[in-house]
Length: 449
Ligand code: CMP
Image 1 (tube, rainbow, N blue to C red):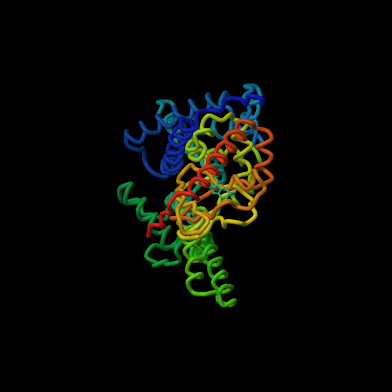
Image 2 (image 1 turned 45 degrees about the vertical axis):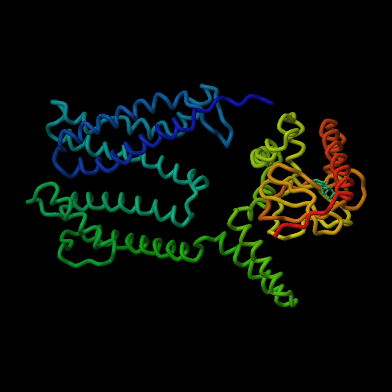
């Protein structure tokens, strides 16, 4: 296997990215305020300095940090640097220039210098584009409902847009200047929200032509935002818990089918029990999910899921990796409800079973006497596959049972390729056959209630 280039530890990457995101949000919020209000308090300036330092550190780190290009991890520093220079570098560089702090320098604080630097500082907010980019990346990784995820981000972007519009309103002279900075900002924000939400009380109205045009644009924007929210809420309500809806549709279809064919109530209830268990144990999606994946990934996940079984069966615990991979690839999940016959004596055997969870009883020839009880990690159904004779006994589930099954064809393949497995299975089958012969001559024990 070719060695993949090292990628940064995910947790560290995530924590660093989260800190940078917070810094970006702070700078994007602070930059327009710096243009329209007087000098911010010292604490805000200190935060600005910290954010700037973080951006500079990030800028330097990006030249060496492994990246993914077209989905492939890249570790070659020259390629990383070239990729970065062509991509986010300009945005990151602008964000790393402390325009606001520079304007405090004695020579620049006077005349139009402060205002020009404050305006240039607005470009730092371009770093928000990184958040928009991450929003798209996270979309496939989040466990949130897609509509909820979109709404969450919508709230964030709506707040950011409202903030910038409020600052624009102050810049256009829409908010009275006679108050403190906070009061000016709050009044501008109040105007923004009432206009965006199409409430428009009319207590603050546009006066100059610039303000009138601005107000119209904000109203149209508000309409668009309103439509977006309505659409998403409707989508959220319609698709809430789509998996459950699918499951219920499946149960309903089965119910209709069984009723239509006059299946007795008791049997129908067992079908319902089966579906309930399938849903509650989250086994429902197993098959389709794994079928979707490419073989190596499927094997990897199957190996992980089957680990308790593999560890539970003594001779499988020490089995070699190739053997385990060969077996798990072909294991199929199966579920049985209490009282159900898993195997019927005399039937043709098509597969063997590994018990993932649950307990079964092996029944004697009278189908009532218990010969043995098998539990987690045990297996059965191997004899018919080995001898090509009918099933030697009936097996009944004692509680809800999750099995992995291995069909005849793959059983034979594994048997042929892994002699130790073959020997072990044959040994067990022989011991069981001998046990059954002994049991046939011993006094029968009635099945417990
Ligand atoms: P098979 O004959 O294919 O189907 C019935 C299965 O019951 C059989 O394979 C064995 O796996 C299992 N079995 C039969 N006899 C015993 C026993 N005495 N103890 C445990 N399991 C048994």
